[in-house]
Length: 165
Image 1 (cartoon, rainbow, N blue to C red):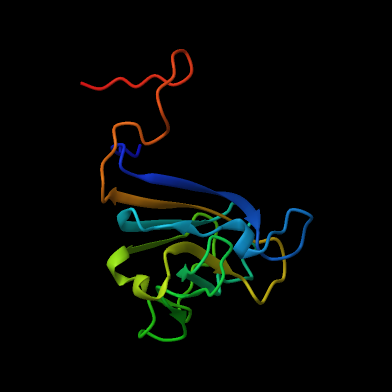
Image 2: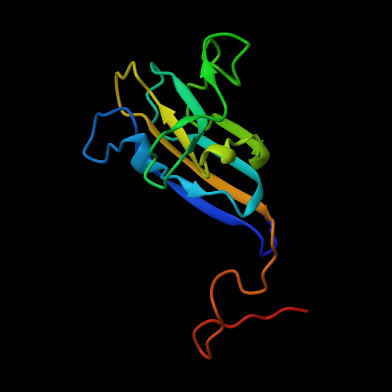
């Protein structure tokens, strides 16, 4: 169970095939759209290799990207993915079996906000596809810069009720 206060944005990234072998295949940019990180101090992402992952394949790329717009415009790496220990996600030792996970954590202070990179997204790819490769995940923006009592919207009788102690 994950317990969080009201100062976090939790984005569930749905299970989908990134390998390109079935009608549910989704592009990584659609699977994990970019989210505005300006109001938060920290970013956490966890990517799960799904139950129908083809054991002959590897998760070839897994990283966080920063973007200048919510549609992924100007995407550039926030964490890195490549061959060797100088990368955050070392593709020489990738995750490649059902239930394997990748955890990525960064601070928004690492983003190039001075040049308009306000958005963050998780990016995952499998390029040597030989079968169905399902992944899922979560992206959490947390430690809000300004705490709000009603982060989900204004209270409205019978619609949204806030209870605090």
